[in-house]
Each structure stands twice: as structure tokens, then as C-alpha cells.
Length: 253
Image 1 (cartoon, helix red, strand yellow):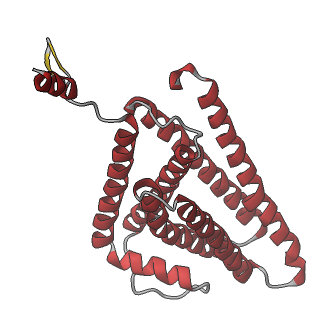
Image 2 (image 1 turned 180 degrees about the horizontal axis):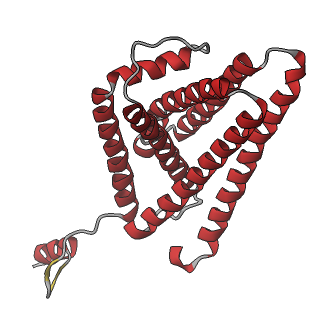
């Protein structure tokens, strides 16, 4: 009799029938995030397979600065799709990384419903997307005022190449943070280092493309303030606002 009662307690058998053992909320969030990452990786695999020459062109643009005749040029609409997907992949992986880091640091409740989780990811992705378009708008304004269309086009192609390669490398820290137990601090530092390196490569390409004479130093300082400092301040303020919203809103408690 005691054995039967113990089995009933374990299986949560009630008058309504078998209800099973409820999956932990934290484990549910981990599974959803991991499935999202795997889905992104599968999409990237398909895009890579169908746009292999554009992938090689992206690597070529990442390595070089000068404009060269490329053997890998395809139709502009296909190249635009590839570029937009690589940017979307980068923003999505940054979203998942920041979301996982916030959970590790305790800024986001470990147990939340699927609806609240998707809501938080959507808000975070929206902030990053706004940050990205804000920077692109400032790139366009500065390029239109201070440089020629040819150099601006060259700069954009190199910038997009850096963003695409950075997005591919982000799979390593994101998978580590979201799925591997332990050593999360190392994964977070890897994420930060990749971000810093991507900014340094972008600044290096900027100097190689635009910095020709000493009087261009003013333009370089303008770029650093307008493109690398001010947008990060806005992004930081947005993330702080999101954190305060989560802390004060009754939807999360």
C-alpha cells in the first residue's frame, strides 16, 4: 500500500487522470533558447550552401580594403538577401547572448512563461535593430557629407563583411553560454573580446579607406564619437530601461 501511494505521489495521479511531472521552467527556457540557436544555424547552413560564392566574397571583403574586380559577383537582389540575412543572424545571436547573460547574472527571472520569454527577446531584438539602423543612418549622413559615393560604397561593403564574419564567430560563445554548464565567465569574456575585435577591425578599415592626410584626423574623431561612442550610450540606456521595466512590471512577477 505504501508503495502504491509513493508511486501516485511521484506521478501526480489525481482524480482527473495522469498529469505527469511538470518540466522545470528554467529547463524549458534553456530548451527553447537552444532550439532557437539550432534553428538559426540550420538557416545559415542553407544560405551558405545556396550562396557559397557570396560567402567567399564576404571573406575577401573582410581581408582586403582596396576595391578589386571580383569573380564572385552575382545579381544585386541575391547579394542583398545574403547581406541582410548575415546582419539578421548577427543581431539575433547578440540578442540570445545578452538574454542568456542577463539570466546568468540574475537580471531576468530564471522561471518565466514562454510568452514572457518571447516578449523579452522581442524587446531586446527591437532595441538592437533600432541601434543598427541608427548607426546606418549616421553612416549615410557622414558618408554623404564628407566623402565620395565610391568610397562610401567601399566602406559599406567592408563594414557588412565584418558584421557577417562576427555573426558567424558568435555561435561559439552563444552556444557556450546557453547550453554548456559551467565556465560561463569565460564564455562571456569571449563574447566581449569578439565584440571589441570587431570594433577594432572596423576602425582599422575606416583609417585605411579614409585617413589619407593629416587634416582627415577631424573626420576620424567625428566618426569615433558619432559611430562608436554615442550609439553605444544610446544602446546602454535602452538596455537599462529594459531592465528597469522588467524589475517594476507586474507581468514578470
